[in-house]
Image: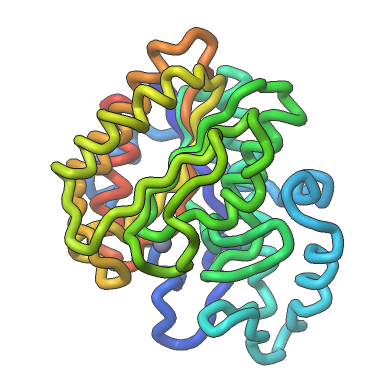
Length: 310
Ligand SMILES: [Zn+2]
């Protein structure tokens, strides 16, 4: 099935402190594994455009966007700290514009029927970015920008976002908690960063808090019982994924115990919903976390292989 990888070389130029886990080797690890697995031969490759101000303003406040641009350091200047573990270098905002632009382009390709599935191999990640706040390595909420584009530019009535990163997608929840056209499902280790409420107070927000040490078997049971039937009932016209791979058992950022096959399984379940729901256009998946380069590359390839059905 036609599947595209969207990326851009400028995503590599954003980097924070030495030894920061969110570094350019992450997207390289995925590209390398795509090649060594032979899966790259099945992929179409597309360059990420720059997101527009109008596309960002669907999910972020104007004041916040202005503030980020004012804070952005000039060429040759030092890093600017946004929070304890998030910083901007002179190339950060350009990388973030490419990352959000990839999500928009992915939506265009899938909604138009040119692609069945898209994986955006981009950074910085986005799912911690709230409407008016950068945090947790995130500046623009890439998956939210894409979902809002699907609704406002393409007129889709229902978009499901599935977030399987080890951390709760607090930014995506903040943006869509009062948007019934979006069903947001986030699993996450709990208690853990970003220390949000593990209970949902909205029908369109599903949360699955998992205790430290949870592995694939428990994950599958929980998804089979609640998430998958709920997503199918929602009848999404598009499925988006916040694809973080830091719940892998080799990833020291978190303490869950997923393996490659679990990412493949989740992806296959979502593909089967695409097939069952009338007029569901496909899947747009956007990279979030994943900080063990080897496990990240292997897990992303298992995910992309399932997306491409090869
Ligand atoms: Zn994460």
